[in-house]
Image 1 (cartoon, rainbow over the protein chains, first blue to last red):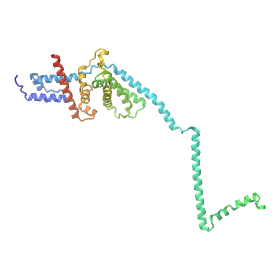
Image 2 (image 1 turned 180 degrees about the horizontal axis):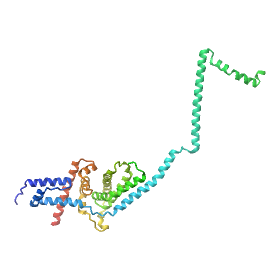
Image 3 (image 1 turned 120 degrees about the horizontal axis):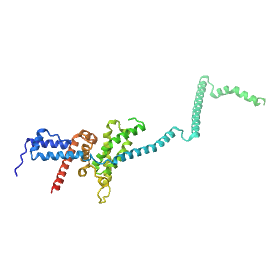
Image 4 (image 1 turned 45 degrees about the horizontal axis):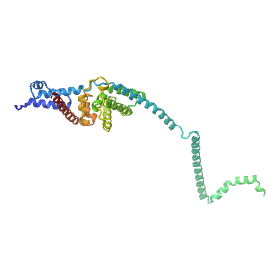
Length: 169
Length: 169
């Protein structure tokens, strides 16, 4: 058997065929097409590659698609059902979040609690201010706070004693 | 995409219906039989609807759905590999319906390839995606896609040659 002589054209065909396998398309220049039609080594290689690419392109082109509409229907139907199921649940969660927890009674308790906290804060503030004022006054006038309170409340005390007859004793 | 629920459903239905024949062929190429392909398409459809809000560009919807289908195919393939073989031949499309135009010989040869090589071939020829598009979709460099295609097509060529030679004998 005579050894095959591989020339420059054969090397170029081989290179183009390698590119065809990497890219998935065969673009053989006209001069190489002419060479391949004559060359006993390149001709079958080119033909084999062309056939493979053509077969791959058409392998599933005629595949039966009978199942596809059913799958699409199932997916759209299932997601619609899922949507209907999740929607009321989402609405009720939103309602619960908007509503005061525990109903009307709990809401009233919450309001009363707020009022009590505000009242306590006011009482503490007034007491503190009064106590501080008495201290300051005592420091300036030299009288102890108890005397101050006695003098301030004296008219009221006299009136009460008069009403309940202590002065008649 | 900030869409109302009705708009969201409508947009998804249009995209999924339009893409589903191509996606089914892709799944058929990766999984090798129409039952599993339909399962993968269904799983992918349900998953895609759930995450449809994450699709920010409508024009990228095709590639996005394809990626989901490819992943669903891998999941179905893993589930299938866990099944105990019964010794029965898997049911083919032609056993239930008249033979379609699927090149089953080639589809079976594809199943002998590793997942990533098979996926590259399927996306290139069954989805008609370019090498850069496949690289983007699979999250690998273009060189890797070319290398996978080169190796896969080389193996397919050898297998077909062997089958042809055995057929001649």
